[in-house]
Image (cartoon, rainbow, N blue to C red; front, side):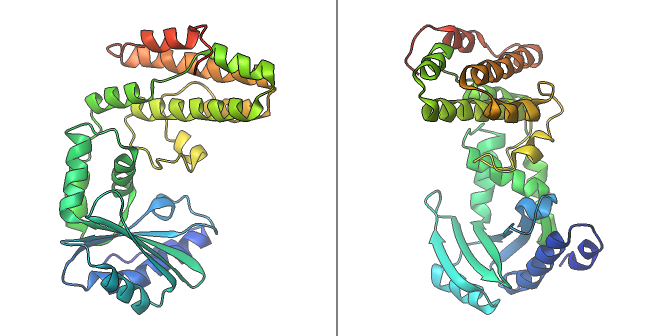
Length: 292
């Protein structure tokens, strides 16, 4: 068992210290089960991003994920209240529970070791584009191990963000609609749809930049955007400030500002990944079509 509570308490982030101490308190209840292979703290707490509103995200890795009744028993054993037990709609080797402990939400993700092996191979070898799998790998890379350090280390060695994977993910996000359609929306005053599409463009840009930097996405729903952008060594200048600035501009100016970011991002792709053909993306943006 890795002791994290005492070391964290001396740091500046008191809320993180509290959450690490809760994780250390909960972990032994799971770690002592015969089928348990590893326990980690993940998410914002492990990354040092947490605040007073953050959950404690625990990853429990099993040879076989226990049934719901057993997971509920374990949640109650640690003193959890408001216990909810969920199956996974993604994989039978995944499940999720949550409960509160000392007024802090504990979010427990259960995964089987074979499922984790498959996720790693899907992404690192088969270049799977599913963002939740990328988020799982990002969690492994930043996690604090509480039990099973050796298996976590072996997974980390396999979590390689290759150049081929980057090419696949750049192409996955290299999807933009015609600028003319956005301008039509601005002329009509259709601000809700326009702002929705501008947000989509910025998320696509973030996806391209993460791939360009060969970084697994920390959140497949784009949480923690400022923290994520701070990880990017290669990005348009002042990307975060300019992406945020878009939302304070009038509609027409916002379109111009977001497309300046698009143009600069495409130039970076050309420079770093010339084998990725950005011609179709440029043609789609320049099309006079009003069909998004």
